[in-house]
Image 1 (tube, rainbow, N blue to C red):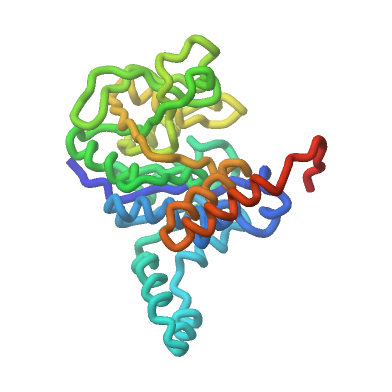
Image 2: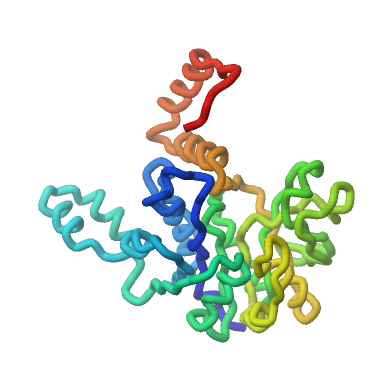
Length: 300
C-alpha cells in the first residue's frame, strides 16, 4: 500500500462573495487572525505527514506562490534586527525545496476539473484533497486522522461531520454503513438531496483521500450541476469499483468561502489563543452590549 505523500489544493476560485476585497487579493490569502486561510490548510496537511503540496491555481493567484516561496530579504531583515522568534516561526512554515508545485486551471469547470488538472503532478499514487475554503479547529488535525484510517483500510476516505437534519439539502451527504476501525463504510453519496430524502445527516466537509483511478473517471466525466464537472459524480462512479470509507470528524469547521464563516473563524481562532482569549472575550461582550442591529443597514 502506497503512502499518502501528496495533497492537492484547488485555489483557482474568484472569491466573488468577498468583493471588492478580492479584486486584488486572492480569497485564500485573506487572513484569519494572523495567517492566510491557505496557510491553515497547508499546516493541516503538513501535520498529517504530507510531503508535496500541489496548488491548482488560476489568474491573479501568483501571490499564493510567492507566499510559499523563500523570501531572502525578509529573513535577512529579521535576522539583522534580532527578531529570532519571528524568523524561526516563518522558517517552520516554509516548505522545503521542491515540495510545492503549481498548475493552472485555465477554465472554471468546477472542482472535478480542478482535481483532474493535477493528474500529472500526483501520478499513480493516492493523494489528499483539501478544499482551501474550509479550515478546521481541533486538537488533532482532520487529515491526520484520515491518514491513520487510510493506513488501516487502504481505500478512499471522505471526512464527514453532522449537520442539522433540516439542512441536509445544502450539502453532499453520505450513507453510513458498518463501523470499520476508526471510521465506517460509506453506502452511498448524494449531492444536495431533496428534503426528507437524505440517507443521514453526515455531510462531506472538504477533506478527501482518493485513489489515482479518480483521474481516469474525471477524464470522461460529463458536466453536471452548474454545468461543471462535479467531483461527487466521479466518486459515485469510482464507488462501484472501489470501497469508500468515512471519517467522522468532530472538531469545528469554518467555511471561509462565505463572509459569515470567515468572521466566525477569526473569532474562534482568536479565542483559541492563550494570548488573546481574555481580551477578545471582553471585547466581544462589550460590543454585544453596545452595538444593536439597525433595522436597515446598507452593505458596502
